[in-house]
Image (cartoon, rainbow, N blue to C red; front, side, top):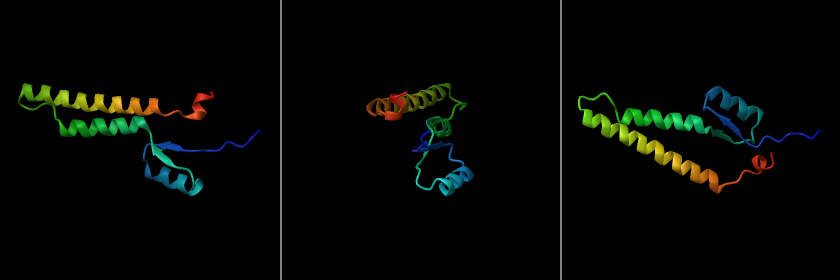
Length: 92
């Protein structure tokens, strides 16, 4: 059997893991996985546009802003993924 070439690592940005990967696989790029990017964006949006204010109108406006940011991010992400083809996935 042939040797498998590792082309990229997807991580959760955990420091010890990134350090170990850099030592063991120095030439392999490390990317943050999409799930973690999404969770980080959601967390930032929740802090920026808080719910449970004294105004129900403000709560609704903030919830809409949060949802709009997540929807826009999803649209951009899907567009970028569709514009790129990953050969190793296409051959499976």
